[in-house]
Length: 325
Image 1 (cartoon, one colour):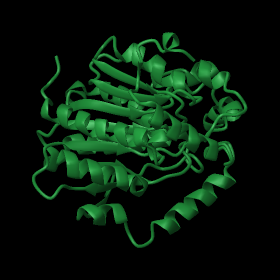
Image 2 (image 1 turned 90 degrees about the vertical axis):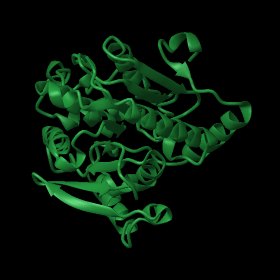
Image 3 (image 1 turned 45 degrees about the vertical axis):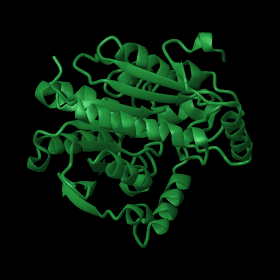
Image 4 (image 1 turned 135 degrees about the vertical axis):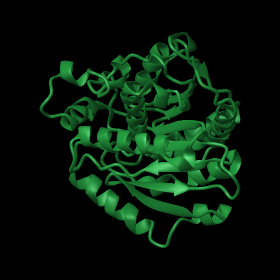
């Protein structure tokens, strides 16, 4: 893939040393099994192991001297991490995990750094998972939690930035589309930061043409996996927003910062939504050369640079959080 094919994406700046580090880590990833969301047994096992690993609390929070509070909002658990001083804004986080694994606590390492650096409160949504709930139920949880946050007295008048990673990017974008029913609430959102999301549940070109040697995700099986999320729908129905946010109307949307990896089967999801989003609001879109899905979790200098830039972007959009016309 050459720069000419990247459309409105900007290649992430890195030197040869940083790029070599990413490629060396990719060689390790190549030995690992690919994540397959169509398998229901494996996600349940991974989820159980995740919860066991979280026993004893969060070392990431202790590192920054922070604590987390759990609240139940309309039967939707949320995890709230507050800064030590007055909050300048709120970050609403939707975790990843292919809709079938994950929880709010798994993002503590990212969110604690955001709270400490940006002086904001982070609210992470513990939406139900698709191993036992139709995906419409996940969308309902995310919308209910978002509406609660935007009405909550504690956060009144504070600008809000939405973050979503992978399946969380899908849920974040779908939630923004659903908020268009309440324009005054949508106006409260000052920015959206989305990492390698899924925006077309029928599969974009890069998903449909994914080679067998994809990293992290099971490229060739992704189209069928997406269909299993909505087993009773046709592809035409799957393309309807907000289920497939790519085909939505982005009127009134906030500015966005979008990231995708060049080697990610979901690459075109971000490239395509960036073009549509940019017709309504400012968009920064970065493509990470030689990077696979999930790259912000990997021990590379490029990942740390992306996360540091993301925190600066959050702070700038919290400070700029004026109403949009």
